[in-house]
Length: 150
Image (tube, rainbow, N blue to C red; front, top):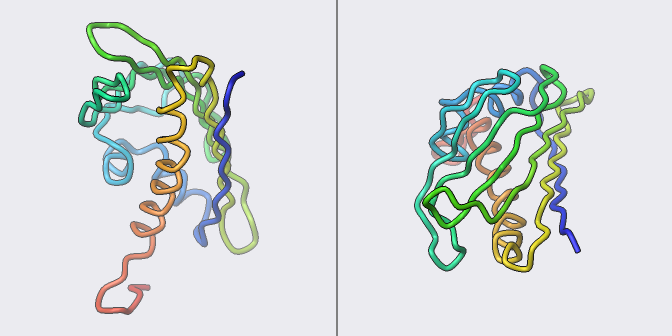
C-alpha cells in the first residue's frame, strides 16, 4: 500500500517571500540541499547530500519539474536509489501555497512510497520535511541575542 506524506505549515510572510524559498536554488540550498534547480517546466535537476547506505541511498535525488504555477503550485519528481543509475524510489513532491490575511499556508504532499524497501525513506522524510519547514522558518525569522530582527 502506497504511503503519502502530507504536511501543512503556516509562515507569517507573504506568498512571494515563501515562494522564493521554494524556487531559488541558492535559498533552497540553505534549508534543503545543494541543487541545480530552476523554476522551469521540464527542467531536470538534482538535490545532493551525503549518502545513507542503510537507506540504500547514494545521496542524490534525481528530479524534474512537472508543474509550475508561479506563487501557487510547484510539482517535481523526487527519485533516488543506491547508485550506479539504479532507482528504487520514484516519488513526486507537490508544494501548494495559499495566501492568508497574515501570511501564507503551505501544503506539502510527497507520494510514491509504494515498495516495502521505501518504508525507511518514507519514515525519514516524514520527520525530515517537518525539520525543513522549521529551517525555512528560522531563515525567514532570524533571531540574534534573543531578539527578532524585524
